[in-house]
Image (cartoon, rainbow, N blue to C red; front, side, top):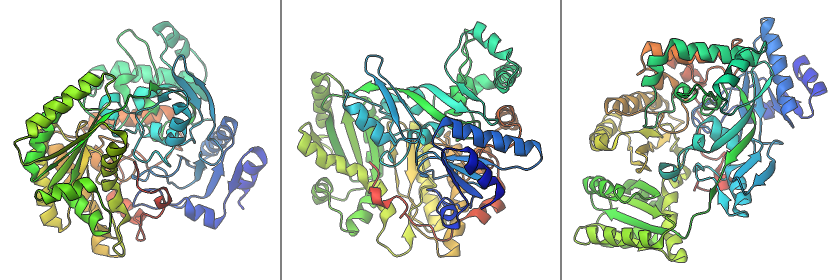
Length: 544
């Protein structure tokens, strides 16, 4: 054990290890990259995180950089939960739910608790947080906030940013701050502090003042998680909240050590439906129609994904019935959770009427038991990651791209051209109500040619998204893997703003280095795994 880990073990409540096996187990996350850390810390309190950060800061002041990477369950698919230096594992001990305020619909918890565990606890009080990601069974709320994660309900209820009330954050030097919107006069007091927090408020205030016009251009309504959400920091009345910078910041500006989240009342019994289309053009036209009814959920699932999972033995009654009426090019799953039963019935009748004389196969259910059979359709995209084909996997590196609805048809055609060029199928699925889409290339990581396809596909996917007015980081963050492609389409002055934000919060360069930074592709190639599989989280089953 190194002298550094020995020193930290003496001063922390939690554990520190340099064990080779442990380090190897933390050298990968949900991405196709691998980096082995120097040590792993399992903090038991905010105080432990503070001590690690303070130690790392002091080392950096002496010229020895020991980067810190906060980590939840390690589900990140962009390489943001791995790194050299110190991995700070939040899930081992920091998973407590402290209190639920039913009246104000607030919950206070530690970042290591999973989204599912939190929602199960809230369910006892008739509450839930709708912005749960698909990986809620095993992903942590700290990770969800750090990635500004979203899920199938986010079209109606928003991403994690919309549910954060307050954060406790450990800064790069070990100081702790509480976020929350403060009035203009209180901002002046913060700027007057002779502390690192004061330096941050002064730096952020000056940055906003110097780049006001440019920052306003970044305030777009469509999903774009790349960089830092600086437009949301200061409102017109002069009030400031630093939380938008940490949300989606992927641990590059500070380490979230405690959270207070807003919650929502559990929905009434939903109306659930599924519509199978015989061709992709009809599916796209159908989605345009369905958007008019404002469903809480609208998911597009390519027919090719059904073919893959059915070939592995999975059975879906809806798909079997639809196949009897003709080929299934795509399925659109919808869900209405309006409190008014009349509104749901009216929407159901109008949908049934619209598709009555078409080739589409439609099933609408309000009966809970029958509806559950339709809900199983949501597992199909994730099920392809558990392929039964030897050495064949579908890593999630082409996921979460925002494409404007009016450009989706053109985008889908370009994806077909990429398929032909790279000789790999790219079936599309995604949150159609949010215009966020995924592709699932099946690759053999034991073959160098398939590994090389990753960067070619990323580049061509990114260019296709950008050329059709979209953003490749419409969901989650850019991490290491996607940063070069996300920033490749940004103006230099925008990239400078993001660099300046990072310099304000992390002047020593110790916070999750390499994440949300423009990395050379040669370096990414060095980190590329040659043994990728989907076994890390398979014990939890398909995400839902």
